[in-house]
Image 1: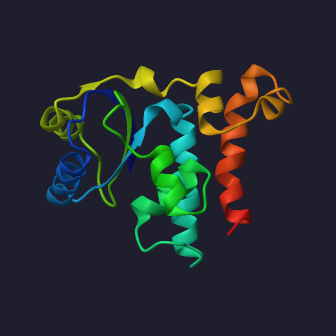
Image 2: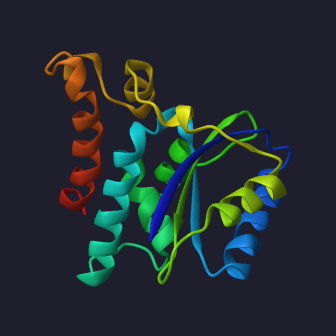
Length: 169
């Protein structure tokens, strides 16, 4: 089961924030990855990254030993962790966040998501996952690339970058 949610909030200390996420993840038998939502072009962006990362583990073509980090690589469209984390990872100055939550067995209950957000002092806001031209520019897609498609296909440009991670391995 997978859930992707958006949220608004502030981080005072990234290390403490990530430690809270890891602790919550361990306590609830979940896999959680957090992203800068300013670069997430709708939920399908993360759904596709998760599918690619899982396939990489299944076919032994993964670059990392962690599904969370492998997802980060694909979501960022980068092949190197040193590029992916600064690009897509959370920073103190972020106020919009995307959470990808996976559970191997069973449903992810809304109460679990509410509990996570409460511990982080965040408010759920799925609107931060809405795609627009600014997001794809921030993601690293050039004006030349953007000009090749209609606005309805902007998300496809991001998905192409996700898929290209397999090619640049």
